Image (cartoon, rainbow, N blue to C red; front, side):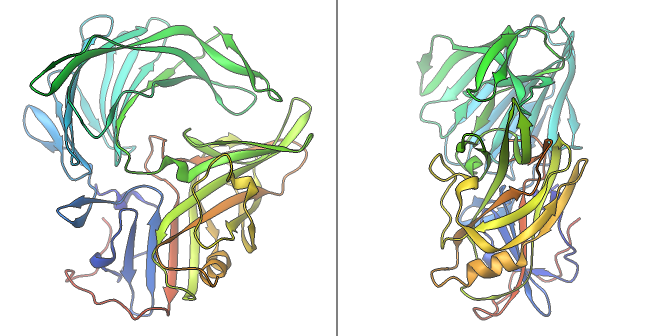
Amino acid sequence: MKQFDRLSLSDLTDATEDIAKRKPNSKQFVFADKRRLVQSLGLLHFNDGGKQKDIDLTPVDLGASWRIDQAPYIIEIRKDRLEFTYTSRRGGSVTVSVNSIGGPPRSTPVIDEAVGTRIRYDDIRPGLDIYLQLQPDGVRLFKVLKSPVAPTEFIWNIQEDEGAAFTVMADLVGSDSKFSKDTERRNLDLTRTVGPVSAVAGVKSYTITELFNGRASEIVDRSTRRREWKTDLVYPLVIDPDISETITTGTDDCDSFTQKTPISTWRPNLTRQFCYGGYYAAYGNSSNVHAGLRFQTIDLDNAVTIDLANLKVNRVVGSGTAAGKWFGDDVDDAATWATTNKPGDITKTTASGSHTWSAATAVDTIDVTTVVQELVDRAGWLANQDMAFAFFTDNTGSSHINGLEALEHAGTTPAILEIDFTGGAAPPTINLVTAPYIPA
């Protein structure tokens, strides 16, 4: 399935895509009476010989292996053993194969497209599942330790081209299934060791050993962020390294906290799987929690008429019901989120879009028409500049905090911005499309 077809979009029946307007993160469609821009935080296209083509992560069956080649990378996955070869379109490839996972693998892979594209190895060892999650910007190799009998050491054989344009299993993270009082999963104590490297004819060979040390850290003092190691593990445990390229910008979605007593702001957290918004009360204190979203290269001319603009976020975790408003960052070209540019610190637009978060997993739609209109009406707004939005809560009293799916999450529904617009530059010439584009 194409990456675009997985998005939760409004009806595009009778709309024709203007292929010449494609960008890595967006598509533009033309209706009889107006145009629509679909802007995604995640990648929709990849560059193939100068053309932006749809990303499609559907595995092709080659008999002894599966192959995915309609993406920024090419990956071939063996069926008879846990081994895959990842090749970047920027140059270089790496082959990853299992060396030791506590004994010989005892299961064969299956394809699971219920949540994106996964290659699953169920019960590959007692108490252990492994799966490959294929994403537009790379591959994530999950180990799911389902019980205490699962192995805790994993050794991988790596063969990597020198000078390759990606990182190999460098960011080793993991968590158990207990949420701390700070709405964060507890981090596992993990050790990553790289074995001796030998190089022959431009190919490096080495091993990577991942070791789980039997404990998880939990925040015990929110005011100081002090953590303590805990051994009361709650299964399943999830360990997640990846092979990734600098293609998407995970810093485009994040959250930050504004503590009330004393007044202070902290984070933003740029790399976790959920971006939180709402009101958090604990440890005798309280904080407003601001989710932040930034969309790059918005292809709208200055002062175009915005007929409708919807921000769509996938609410996946949380407690209570956060309620509040999304404001735009009132600047011409929104900068990336950083310690000096947190969602809670933006200069807010006058306009806003109200949002009461769903109580269960759902895609929430927020009308931000007046916000986008205010931004494109700025004297300094130019086509292909960036827009950012931040959530400000109306909650008080008890905690109401919800999390939306971030780019780092293994799901398939990153935040999207749909904009229907008229005016501005002359309508584009439509070519290369002979029939209306209707998602499957």
